[in-house]
Image 1 (cartoon, rainbow, N blue to C red):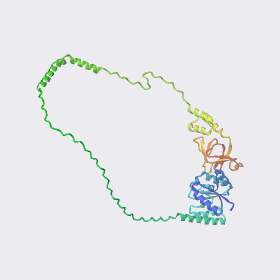
Image 2: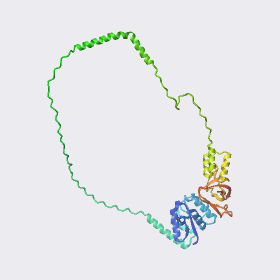
Image 3: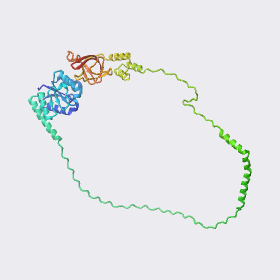
Image 4: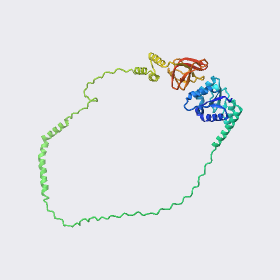
Length: 400
């Protein structure tokens, strides 16, 4: 098994365990390939993984809750099984083991690292010298890990020296500011002078005159009020009260005070869907057609035929690709038509690629399967032209 190349398939969530195990196997003398250790800077990641997978004899798949949900991991397992490679599962934590792996002998690391290494040696069928080195290296790494995990005694706190009482600072009395004394001028002394005796007034004459004037006024005005002047006064006051004040009403909104309203001519209705479709046709790109589909999904038959013909004209290359796994999980996102199931696929589906995949010259089991025509990158689109069942999985012929 010295020439046996071991390929690691795993989820990124388990990177710490995988890197440690890969280093231990490599140090013991096994030939391993791990993307995080062996892909050189500047090379394409997906191409390096594909070449390493093809040149490896054994696939070591790390099983965890996250890895069994990973499409990339399951793709690598499917490829290895289809190509007749040895697949060795490593159970890192309790999880639902995929059906296709349940009958394979696996290494169990859920009961501890020591037991996991022993079962891994049997599963990989390692040579005795490599197996012995691996046991020693793993044991040493485990003891080092336990030593590092031991709680360290807390450092003793230095004894605090008794603080000496601080000497009180001498109290310095604040300097008094000199007071400015201002001499206010003394007010002049009042001299008491005897009051001048007031002259005697004719106090009896003035009230007599005022009384005579009041009596005369009453004699003159009372008769007039009792006769016609009262009516005149009343008439004048009623005229004042009955006088209406003109009110000015503000003009209605719009700036004019006319009662005649001019009717504006109605504008013709705009067909927004037709304008949007015209713009999509002028642009002639998949993004424009999909924007129209999302905004106006309820197309009539004529527009629907035009839509399907327009997107088919965008893709001229043809090839084959695996559409779904044997458990029914699809590798693609179905975009059109809407409100139809993704599995099984149907001719005419517009699909969106969720991860980088190779386009083959034929379906699995045919002569063109080993010929690669190209690569569909993530978020590319393709149209299904033919559906090919492969057991419980599906392969499809596509234009892309």
